[in-house]
Length: 434
Ligand code: LLP
Image (cartoon, rainbow, N blue to C red; front, side):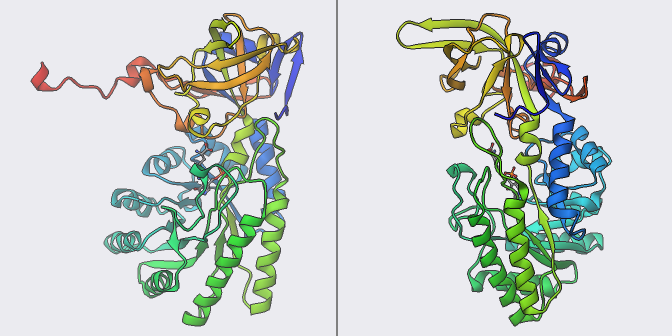
């Protein structure tokens, strides 16, 4: 696990200067806590590896990993862009006062309403996933008398080595435009000829939680071959190239690779290609999500009932579960944990951490060694910063936990916990039942 900014003092776990047991007592559990400093340090690492030396490049944080107005404010302060995939994410960005021109819009089935919002707000780029979308966007732009920069997301036909549900670049995928010439080239032609869109380049995203760079490089080869074809057919060299996200993080024993491991060879290959073909180096864009927020987040739970089944398994139930972290149930994802109020005791008991939902699959960690757990203990689950809050649900009508931003010993709400009132705000009794 990643132990950055964690310390143990008098048996208590501290994170970014905050006593996590005290946080649990003061703010309640379950609660997501994020270290602002860890997020900032990831952004700085990315800047060092990607944008500082090459100012034309852009980092567009994939906010599907963790999205709220405070996060957009932090991104804005750090001076990076963002990628949104829905009207809701777009709205959150605008609500936070995030500059619209720094937004790019991904997604395989954007609605007309979402495209209208994007055009009205004047976002930076739409990443087109289908011909229908291109046509719809042109209509919207025509109506609103605006022009939108577009990239085409292609399916590079690359199988990345990760969980099947988070592979996106293989040919049999709902995402992106197939690379077959007779499919992709007419799109490019339509965009180049359009009055309402400006075709600027190509985009791929091959998957998530990746630790090798060969999949990216293979996808890049395919993309550059297409760029060459576009040039030979239409005399146009791409101006932008977006490599998506996907850089892996440490959950348990995996080792996060430095960003340069992925980004240097990608950049070098594009440079060599541009040089060889005598065109201007395109702006390179990345969309990291998990690698910016994943390791920064911790979920705090309170242990409730415990149950030892002799000769079989020991269970400890916490006050959250698959509603605040669906990843173990959905992907078999593994997590590390510590007892925040008993952080340096020997981990001498094997226990399965389960949630409180009415579902046997509601297991957060299967068989982890921890100090013996008792009711009231505060359990900290690490690396829950990405795809936990954003994938939370109200199953069993459990409210979505709040999010605290920690910063050098100070904790503040970034998202308040959902109240029962709030959760049921949309409920109405139909007239027929009154
Ligand atoms: N760009 C595009 C077009 C994407 O589809 C994604 C993730 C990203 C960027 C960001 O990828 P990242 O850097 O976060 O790996 N719910 C799954 C992950 C789904 C990722 C979907 N797309 C999980 O919990 O593992």
